[in-house]
Image (cartoon, rainbow, N blue to C red; front, side, top):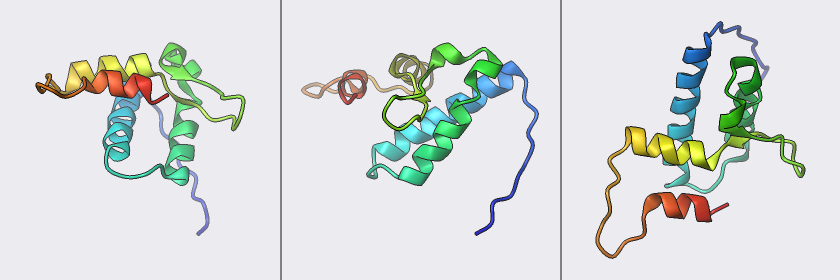
Length: 103
């Protein structure tokens, strides 16, 4: 399939909100499916623009091994606290701990 080029103009705040949507989607996807390389590369591509939108502190990368960018785990943890009511289930691990320990 041929690639199509699109141009999207975003403010810094719109890019931040876009990152949040991408991060939450990635979080939900990873909870149910094994890693998808094409999806990971697309997320990396979007994250590579973080510096242009003053969001570089929310992204890690490029990684030395594959050159990919990824959402910073601390940003992800804060985002989960902001957007999801994860609470604590008695006898279960805290979801933020599982996220940080999976690195």
